[in-house]
Image (cartoon, rainbow, N blue to C red):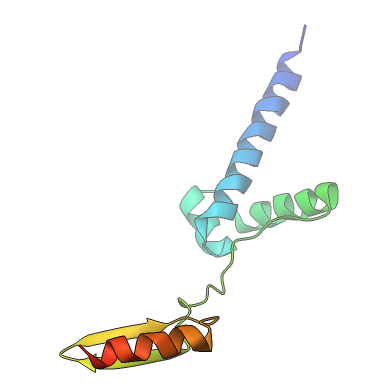
Length: 104
């Protein structure tokens, strides 16, 4: 039979793990997340350090999200129409496409 103190420790550990998972998916700074969650910034930082020490690493959100990649070639066909040609388009495919474009 578990003692009440070990049960409380288990619930606290589960809550801490949930908060850390929520932080990882939130995309916020540590300060913003701690403020919104109602925990101290130093507490969040301590939990993150303990997780790093225990697991060796922690997955963090990508805060340097890149813009959508643009096509290497964009043809303006007039009347507001454009054609994006992706990288990897073979020259012979483009040669076959150009006569079709001239007909538009």
